[in-house]
Length: 634
Image (cartoon, rainbow, N blue to C red; front, top):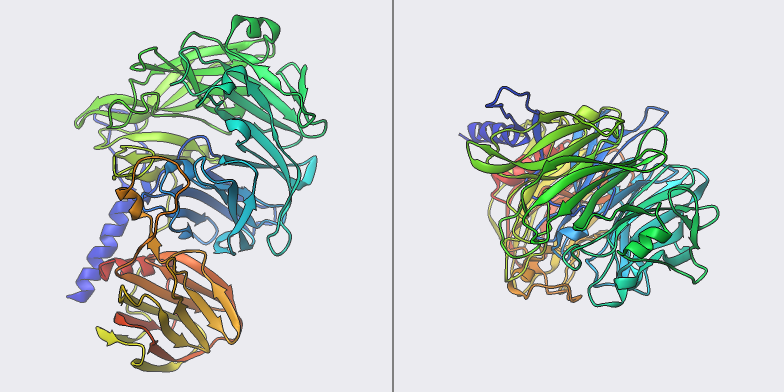
């Protein structure tokens, strides 16, 4: 009976990962795979997903970052060399707001760096760095990078003219585009500002409350960072200009597309922008679009010749009609091509965020191809589906191809990963959407998942292989301990489902191989491993941010108390020198310790229950760990 249940569970996992979509109109549909059932992102913090393949052939992986409605910042790593997939808990118990999705950067030494911040209400960034090259399952401790102003939308770059620094762009000083140069992290992960932060431009309308430019960035990889931006939020101004400038990292000059200097960043004199004919007359090459509409933008990219292309949306005065456009610099002017009408706002909540279009993405390897989310009538009614648009060099809209069909729910906010295999590099959000933040007003928030055209590995699950011992349902106390002897092994996995007494949410959980796993007595308990006097603490609280569901909507800087887990699944695995802990199926901690050999597991030192203990004489794959978590009811 148990074997049958595990087999059924494995089939369910495969059915979640692969979603077959058939065209009812004779078109060719994408093969759609599910990255996660719980994840979302905004579209102003990038890159939210990257691919990295090194020349040595030792790394070939894709990394995708997102946040869920429980406040978990997470990342999926697809290792194309080993054909494995891993999901990492980057940070638990964060502000549950889709603006807080992480952004990713591969460092010169091939470690992977993850940036994240709260939405406008905290003067800092957070970051973590992988301990091993190209492997986010080995993330080290969390660092905090303090600023003098609130932060949102980190966008990091390393350019070949200055490979020893990170250039970080974000919405910061006075709610405006901001830039700073950071030192590349040292071996311990420390960084510091060594130029900036500096505000880059100033909107003349920026003196009013709530007026702020929105910017998208991309680099040419060498010496320039391209920046497309608006006068303000389209809600705030019915004629909202779109501008384009670039920053030369060698001269620190802000210029227009023709290279005319507008300002020197950091010298105190800001370039003022405004949505007026007078500004357009004075700076004709800085203005991309002055159409009298609530313009917004989705992405800026560069074509093979280095010329910028921009995906934009033009929103009507009443905000009920959204038109997608593709804008390209021809060398002499901005060429604008209409792509499609995108209906109105895509989400289910009326009268808020009516400028939220369903989204556009530019193909990073072929800038003449754009992916858009538009409403299509299907067997489930009017649902947002994905389409592919191709634009000629003369600005003529060519082929339009529908990619998803008869979806039960919306496909929105697409993003193209920069990868040589463009056909399998599209990722997007799928599902319902009610608000960008979880609150008592709309407690469901953004309950979407993430889907992709990439193949997601699904490894064979064999939960009997290497299983040595299993026990169930122990009542525990601080004095009571249970010991299980096992044959000596330097590769092992310990699986345990725990429920801690809410008034005594602390204690030693288990001991094994000379280590102990403990939970401190703390309002925000972060578990830790102890080896002698050495303590390895988790970044993550044993709880979530569901407390926000009971609080007013807003970004006021609060950290509400975490909702501690009533029950959670703990897995500890070891192979070689690598020890990993998993909380509810997600990678939590990575510790490198040599010489570990298991011969006995001692459970106890806490008040609560321990259930579903399993000990394996091998390191389980994460697919197997997730299968166990699901079978145990977590």
